[in-house]
Amino acid sequence: MQPLSAASKTSLPVAVFGQTDIGRRRSSNEDHYLFVNLSTNHCDWDETEHSFQLGEGRTLLVVADGMGGASAGEVASEMAVKTIRDALMMPSYYCADVRLRCAVELANQRICRHAQHDPNLHGMGTTVTAVLVEDNTAHIAQVGDSRAYLLRKLAISQLTKDQSLAQYLADMGQIAPEQMSTVQQNIIMQALGAFETVEVALTSIELQSDDHLLLCSDGLSNKVSAIEMCETLGAEPNLNAACDRLVKLANARGGEDNITIIVAHFSETSVRAGHTNAGTNLDTIG
Image (cartoon, rainbow, N blue to C red):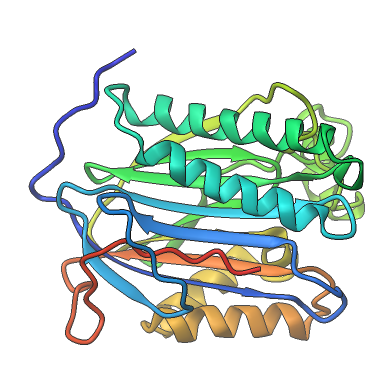
C-alpha cells in the first residue's frame, strides 16, 4: 500500500450541484446523494450550487440508490453515504483508492449487519457510486448500476460499468449490446448490504480544466442518454438549471423511478462571486 501523497498546490477549483426527485410513480424517495469538501466537518443541507477551491482539501461525491421495500431502501442509501463520508474524514496514510475501497466495504458491512438486527429491514440494499477527488485525480468506486460520467471537450464517456444482469449477459456474449434494453433493467449483480463481502469496482482518471463529472442513479440514465446529458450541460452552463432540465426530461419520459444527479465542474472559473463557500458542502436529500 502506498502512503498518502502531499496535496497538490495547483488543484482545480470546483463548482458542485446535486438534485434528487421522487419521480412520477414512486411513493417515496430511496435515493440519497452527498457532496462534501472533506477538509472540514461543517455541512450545508440545502439544494444549492456550491463552489470552493480544492487546495489541500479533498472532494467526495456519492450517489446511492436504495432498494428493499418500505423504508428499507432509504435507510440503506443514507447509511451508505454517511458511512463513506465519515470513513474518509478519518486521518489515513493509505493512498486514495485504498481509502475509498475500504470506506465502501465498511458501508456494506454496516448495512448488512443493521439489516440482520432488524427484521423490518431484511433484504435492504443500495447501489453506490462514489468519487474521491484528490490532487486533481478522480478515484471512482462502484457497486451496482448507478453511474459516473466524464464530460470533456464536448464529448462524454461513461467511467463506470453497470453491474447489472443486462451488462453481464452482454459481457458473456449471450446477447448483443444492442439487445441490452430488452433485458429487465432493475436486476443488478451486486449491492451494498446483500452479502457480508462485496467486490468494489475501482477506476481513476486525471482531471483537466473545464471537465465535468456527472453522477446519477438509474432513474436518470435509464431515461436520458449520455449524449443528451452532454448536450444539456454544454448548452446550459448553470449547473442548477442543467440538472433541473435533465430531471424534468427523465420525468417527462415516464419517471418510474427516483431520479438523482450530481454535477461537478472543475475549472479556474468555478469559484465566482456569489457562489463561494470555503467549508464543506453536503446534500443527502431523499
